[in-house]
Image (tube, rainbow, N blue to C red; front, top):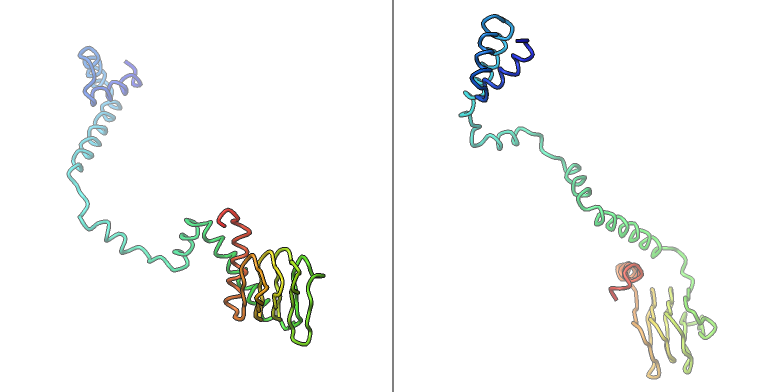
Length: 207
């Protein structure tokens, strides 16, 4: 018998799967081969060692003790983990943070010139002395009317929202406004108004 075949039969012998004829041949080879006999002896020692450790169990507080010795996670690490777990929320937070910063900066712009945004500018009347934009009676303005650094006086109709930023909205008894009326005189109202518009543009189905 060659040693290569003997090594295979040794494993079968240790597993208890060897037949009588093969066992007799193996034992005959082991009596004559020191290397295979030593190999069988080493395998038997390894098996005995593994079996002797089967009753070993870790202490009940082993996990807690190991965790207690680990360095505490820093706030930066915790934030990094949270951002990786919630990428969409993190991106949205950054977007709104930057948007809010831009809006705050625009609120404090030194330009105090009366500014009007409307699809029908030619239908409006601007009273420079009172710093008021007037929707004359009998006139219909299509879409939103937004006035900054001044007030709005509605005598006619507005088929949309009327917004006065850093001003007020006045309505006569003849006024008809299809949308919302907002007077924005505080920075937080301004930021909220702009973010609400961004949200409406991004999520039109939520309206």
